[in-house]
Length: 539
Image 1 (tube, helix red, strand yellow):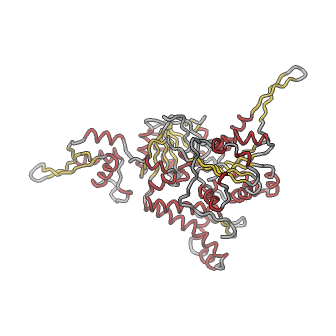
Image 2 (cartoon, helix red, strand yellow):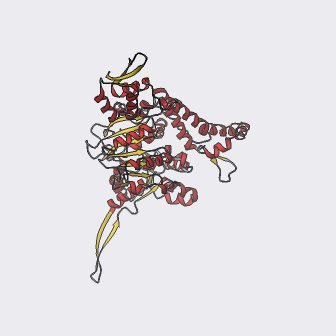
Image 3 (cartoon, helix red, strand yellow):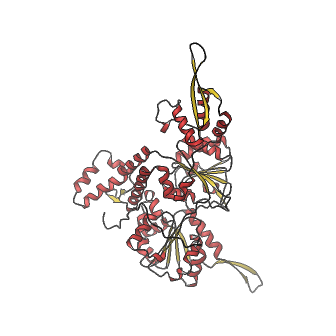
């Protein structure tokens, strides 16, 4: 595929051991930063709350000021950019008392770092380079250090940002002329590739494992009905943060939950979405790192650059299947102490859904690029035949993210980073098909989380079972109670009869989650009629 460097998508990669007793980036880097010359590639492979940004602003920034060097700090989201700018402002602010000849005194505020660091979005850099290549090249020459924060941006955002190839290419070029620090907990396809090709020296690779000790347990829900029940149950004991995969689902949850929790539901999506005015916005969702309402429903705009230091946050719910995204979601909570824990609920996806998603990616994202590349291997007619197939142009215009029209609208451009994004997703989905969705998702985020997985339970059904053990009851009455209290649906909601849930389905749920079962027996009520009775028993 042209001259672009292709990254291999690794299934597993060994990570360097963390030195004993070292728990922060500042600890494991030590004084090594003083040796980072131009042409150095540095990796901070560490999770949230590991001190990556702290090191840049409290250690590297003062050093850069002392050495008369400048830092370009790049962020993937505006909230993160504003947070880093605020931190720079607070750290660099000085007050000087100036006395004038007329005796008037004035306190002059200055920032010692004003000319040492510039904090911007990747998107700003991409627009600058695209709109004024010569001016951008001249301007960027002044920076000695470049910090590529949340570098998984290059893996997660290509499908929504056509210009991302610009920053990817430029950052790799800068590793020859600047000291570039790449920071992320979930950019392993890049980091592993650089290790494999020798583009990163071992002494400049700093690793800290993610710390999810604040997660007390993880459960999976499989239906919208169960999701609503989880939100209602968890909202009784604290604040709930819900990440949705579509704005329409956020709208649906908001409409339903505002009836149960009036004035206690906050919502937010990207300010750039056309639907943004329907929702509350980030400033109404989070203030001073504390959630404003009991229930907060957001899109993935909330998964980077947001720190939540709120001990009342007791539950995080995610409908997203991507392990990289879910790792970032968990990183939003910053526990204040060992007692500041929360329960996590992930949406479950069936083998059939995963297979269908892989086929969608193949058809809409990877096959178009494969056919497009045929015109460069002497098979131009194959590309032309594909392009003139009924429905293909509409697919390319409406669904495909790996090809897009050129500026004249007459040809097609290969979106290289989007291909990597979807190849990575295909690899992850394959692991989920082979190993099971739940296990594969948690292992990909952080393997110790597998040990925290528990079956989904509802307190109402637990109490009902305890209160009715050994009691004989009409089957229709008990069936209705168990289905409603346990939010039990037909398997994968496939059956035409949505109202009837069979005994085998009910007993499967009771066995998996509640260590109980229903025993069914027919009894004669008169000479002609028999009636079915159910009894709850422990396994």
